[in-house]
Image (cartoon, rainbow, N blue to C red; front, side):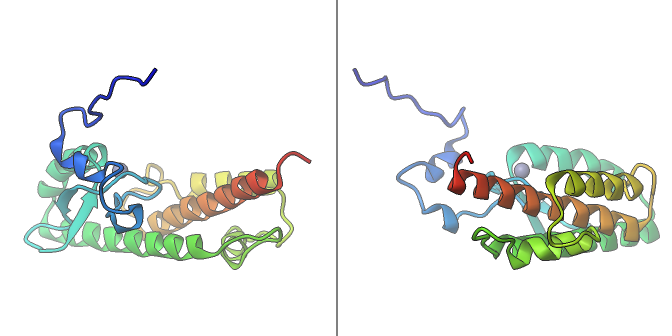
Length: 180
Ligand SMILES: [Zn+2]
């Protein structure tokens, strides 16, 4: 018996364009937040009085807007430093996207090797090594313990991106190889 058809857009009509009959997935703009795969439907200015925009999903747009109030209250100098930090984050993110294109095929891909290098790990590092190195790097460079440190923020973002590359590649391999 067919299940009753029901709109799944939760009252957001613009999401309907992304349904089965919509554009192919690769044509969709993705949320700019690192690690988020949802459609980026909500534009948000990158800096005051600038035309550049982030594109976020609804949840991350709300997140960003909450921080925007804080951003708007900063002095011009602080805001410039913040914008620079955002730009670094974007570069780290682009690097992660680049890594993502590498495809593992049993041995580790170029992308994974780059990510391992970032953690200062050898090519044959195991999951426990990777987990420990990621935790160490993320902890040491976390924005909460390095307020205003753009270098640390850059390293933190890069660590997150590299860890994601490694865990995704590992999961993809496990799926392809099946249980051993
Ligand atoms: Zn998002």
